[in-house]
Length: 269
Figure 1 (cartoon, rainbow, N blue to C red):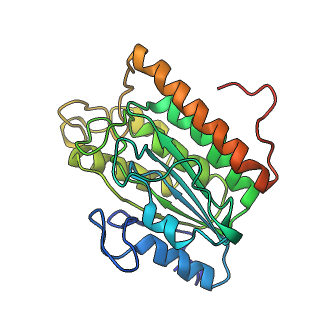
Figure 2: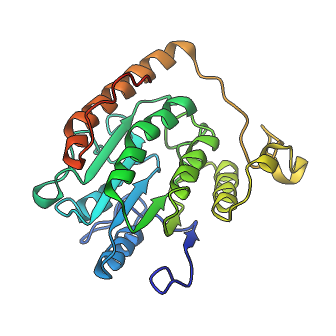
């Protein structure tokens, strides 16, 4: 549909099987639909950016394009030190012609909204602008949300959806999928919010107490957007320091390969 220009945005919440490999299934994934989509787009001559916001590293997609420059793979995920599949560190940046076209930001346990969005602004957005893709494929796994039984991040749905909105504002064709998400109520609300943003709805009404019993959960009855979560003050300092170190490593390893300065003078995190 995107290639025929029948649509400028497509959303498949049941998609996002980013762990599958050519010769084996992995991590609940049998066929890597997002990798195949990127291949279909590049076969049609498109320059593709794949942005993965699932809690788990997109190892299958990374492997598919590790030596290619026509797909920029950006993955924000909980660190492989604490979560499957145990990969996706800052020094995994591609090989050969693909050097600099794989970007990984491993997140520490307890990562919260402000830290996550700050990292996205510091890493993903400059690279997307520098790479200038023709189309964006984006995986919106909701296992990053606080309370997910398989991951250890502390996000509300505001953070990934606000990051999505920033990519939407680039004005490019987009193919968006779901991904992980194992707290069903939180995941359903998160993907409904994703769909609303992709349809161009204003954020204003989403925080106005839409739904009472029908839209709420046992913890929150205020509409599709989550309430703000307070982060633990002691853990916050550790999270901030670890993410700052990762950002600095990515800027040093990858940014110069895209004509970007390793650091922005005077920038504060």
